[in-house]
Structure formats: C-alpha cells, structure tokens
Image (cartoon, rainbow, N blue to C red; front, side, top):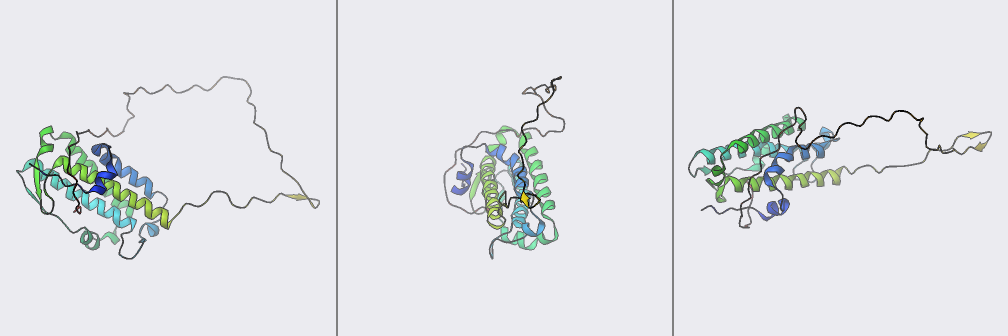
Length: 238
C-alpha cells in the first residue's frame, strides 16, 4: 500500500481546501500577483542564491510538465518508477533568461489546464494507482495532487513576499495642492454638495443571473476529488 509523503509545509499551506480546485485557480492567482511589475523587477533576486519571481514562474512551468508525465505513467502503467530531478539545474540550464515572464506564465497556465483536463476524464479508480518515486517511495495520483497543490501555495506566498519586500506599494496621498491666491489673499475652495438628479425614469437593472447560468467562454469548474489521508513526513519536493 502506498505511504504518502507530503511535507508539512505543503499540507499546512492547503489546510482544509480542495486541492483540485486550488490547482485550477493557481495560474490566475499567480497572474494577479505579477500584475504591474516590470520585467526588470520580475528578474530581480531578493538575495544572492535565491530565485527571482521570474525563476519561480519558470520552476512552476517546468514542474507542471514533469507532473503531467507522472500522472500519465501512473494512470497507465503498473507501479512505474518516477524519477526525481534537480529543480535548480532546471532553472539554471533551461534558458529562463531567454524568455519573458509572461511567456513562462502562459506556459504554466497551458500545461496546468492540460493536466486538469486529464484529471477530469480519468476514472475514479485511477487516483488510487501507485507510482514509485525515486526519493519519496510509493505515492498515488491523489497524493501527488495534494502535494503539488500545496507546492503551488508555498510558491505563491514566496512571490507575494518578494513583491512586498522589494517593491512595496506606494502610499496614497502626499502633499496637498496649495490654494490659489487672488490679490495676495488665499482663496479657500468651497466644497460642492451632492448633485441632485432630476426626476425621471430609473435605470433598468440587469436581470440577476441564475446559479446555473454560465457566461460564454467561461472555464468549467475543476472536478473535485475526495481527499485521501496522508502521513506527515519531512521531505523535499522534486
């Protein structure tokens, strides 16, 4: 029987949230965190030897490709061996500097949606199938989903921390404009009161959407899967 190994930091990041829904939402959450930052800012390292935001995005994109192959091997083969990989070498040697962060984010989102499509169509019994990871041992597809959903959350928090630390939001306000002067005397501005609207037809309110209605082009919700219990054990995701 598989003995799930999910690092505590990933389990804690997920709490009681649905890991399948969390994986579906992660690319858009990441996109919101990157909004407004320049490529130069995204490429800035918070400290020597630490990943920049851009490198974190590249890591997520590469990891999603690896993750897709693991799902497929486990679902189709009997107890396949799942090789680990050196995530630092992936970031160092796969030409991250030759891509834009936007391109890397698009890659991550596309790969994630392809994998979500696979998880949606797999039969229920596939989620209990086992692969043998070279470092963590036996783990099911359900276990891997929980692990990587937590992995997403940890890196999203990391991106948010880097952004807040290196590029804090500017404080609103500042110096108040000086009042104009006439004849050597300052003229105070008179505050305007609320403008009264003339009576007339009230604007028609749009009809409320029914819970079952769907906007054209909207993405379907991710298919929820039951959570499986997993033992806590320290480990390094690879």
